[in-house]
Image (cartoon, rainbow, N blue to C red):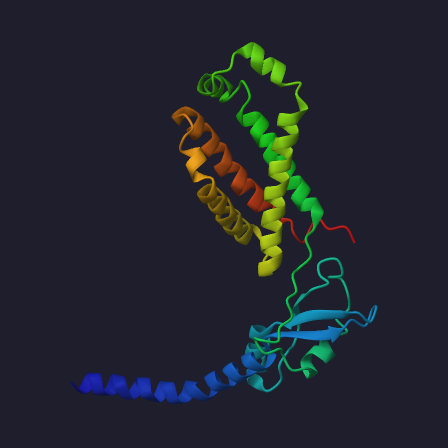
Length: 241
């Protein structure tokens, strides 16, 4: 019983010691969090920036916060700027939740095109004679002569490229709307988009032959992960200035 009383008193004393720093951390975090609209010193255009609130709060425990920018609507094209707008951002008040302007990060086309091309190449390999072409032909009911003739048709290839490109742009748009980048967010949003599309077209998919459904399901799963990883991982790297 005495041990429990002693433990409670120790926890209470620890709480009293940590409570003031915790309040200061919270106040600093709220002070520097949120989007702010500044005037870019380079060309005098408006930009939306974010201060690294966590870093500012932790560094401000000793009385002086070290403020750095962690995001800007003009990045990554101008990520090498001198951050001269930081002083404006520190002085400005953040937007309230109802005042934040509806802005999205720009969509960068090179990662999207690369992801679509990679998904198309994966489909060509997946349906080649080295993997599942024989099973695919049996499931669809085509002969080798018909498949050889289909190689010279432009419409199937153009349709496949268009589907891959539209899906890659869909993932890039979701990343831009959510202000996310990186391989993991790209994978998650790609899987979410693919799942939504499969739900919409679910009735048509379940009517496919079992072998054909398994082959296409494997390709769709790998292509979804590939597109998400490329678009998310390279969204701020393969960028034309």
